[in-house]
Image (cartoon, rainbow, N blue to C red; front, top):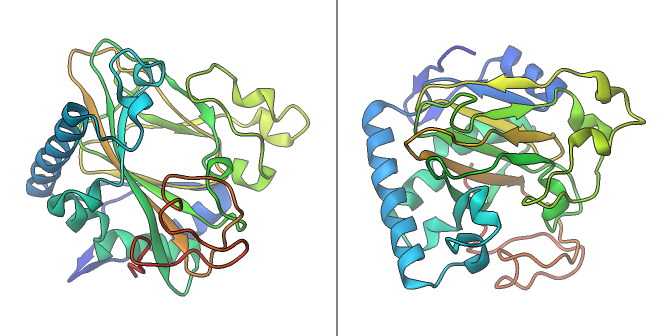
Length: 269
């Protein structure tokens, strides 16, 4: 996809891009962040992750321990925006949230959480095929993610892959992210089993969006440098709580089948 026009405080997606996302469940957009923004966000994310990993007060301690099974897939810190004002500027960026709102077709879009994502050099496994939605405490499947590359990415260091139209196949069981279950384990009786996955190679500053039901995968990092990415998960305003425990909602304490709202899930666009 081509780069987007930056119109003051928003990016404007074309009708073609929106239609592509709704048909295929993902969209690649290049040059979303300028060079100076890439450098700045890299620095902020490194500060946030180094602090979290050093002081032990991570929201996912088991996933960040050097010897933890999940850390061989990637190192992550959830909700960086709550502890780092610089990261918060990007998490709440109306340009990014505005694109998510367009793609979701929502009247307004809320933050669910952000993710700082590192695949460490020469020491990671692939992120196996999975859907995000089964992990989210949401009744409605309208949530979506932006995944921003802060390093150039390809098959050698952990770029993303998507199965087109897989968001139309419905919700499947949650896939253990330190396991090795192949996407086709779940979709043998669905026509997407014959769909060729799409590899999304990108320069730093590009991004992908994907629907919460879209099957996706990230390659291992076999290079000598870390692969850094920043993800933001959005949900349409009015999305309701299904009772599933989640690190984001445990402090909000939403009521069953009531909208997920509050200062930790603000409207961004």
